[in-house]
Image 1 (cartoon, helix red, strand yellow):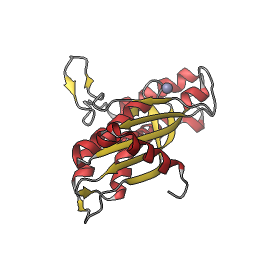
Image 2: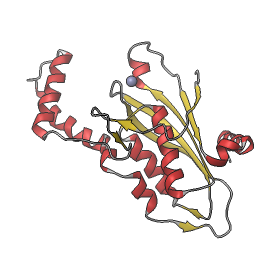
Image 3: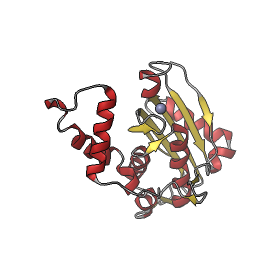
Image 4: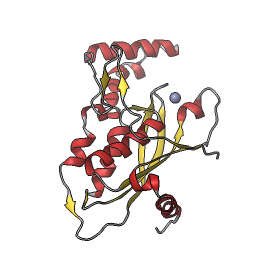
Length: 221
Ligand SMILES: [Zn+2]
């Protein structure tokens, strides 16, 4: 297993569309085709494989793929800000690290639309308020169910938690395997890519950063 450790600054997530207009990562501009158009596109891809689109096993495939895509890319219809913003709980004196480890996710790389399979670890240092733990897992899922690069997804999770919850700092570490590396091109199986984003205290205080990494490594932490 080889690991690449990268540190990406937050706020590197603003996209620019074809017209040069800036848009937020959270509300992608989409103009959806009809179900019929999608099925026709899938049929074209099936023909591209060289298979016989008329054989029984493939008859329903375009409809199934269209349905599967809506589920796998449902993150475009969901707002991570809304997910985080609905309920805050008072911390009642608790101001130490909240760490949610080992959140499994499935995403798709934006270059090949092939799965990225991994785990996200998210920590924050509360400043008077916390969110329900399931909310953080939901945010990971919403971003995962969009076309992604691992680097962008790491920064997006940290940025939205920082912006909405306004904690003293956020730390996000993602470890993932990219099927496009395993299945095609260089065919490097079993390699894991690590990406991190730190904000606030985690960015400025090396000790907090080290504590996050130690807690991740400790199986009972
Ligand atoms: Zn790829």
